[in-house]
Length: 250
Image (tube, rainbow, N blue to C red; front, side):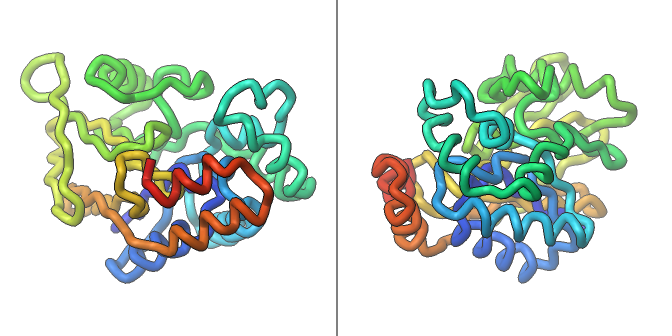
């Protein structure tokens, strides 16, 4: 099965639609959305409605920290990430907020564990951004039976870690479009990057395609109309910083 892994959409409708179309063209048979569907971007209602439709068709959908802030925005404005929480909360109706509130933090399917941040206390939103934090996530995943693969988002970077013969993890920087074998005799942790807000100086959207039959993952970068996404932020009256971030990929 080809499982398309998307995270950190951040209410960026243009990037979301581009990644879904790209994944479908490559034969994706199922979608998994690993949280942060909203926040920062200008189209939270359209994005959540599309996500609900995908969920009705069998997609896996997880909760991220921006869903939590959008549901309960009190105090969130003290952080950059929380600065759009009140606006997002007010855009969503009770049905959309109820959908987000009911989302799970993790999902296991066969040897794969999906989580927004770290499997180590998923609701504390810890970043998996180095070997030490990847080890903590992988060790925590041992609580789920038979898990070999842990996929998450949250850090807006595409990185792969694997455990070789020792206890430490090796870090690997993937090349977009190049399949990477993930044999089951090893343990793996991957962050799949951000669909809606890349931060590495490249404005192209990020997602990954996991082929469970072939045991390989391919990280992708997808061009999209980031100028239109930035314009949606400006029309909404949200901070200019978030529009510029999409234009610059930072």
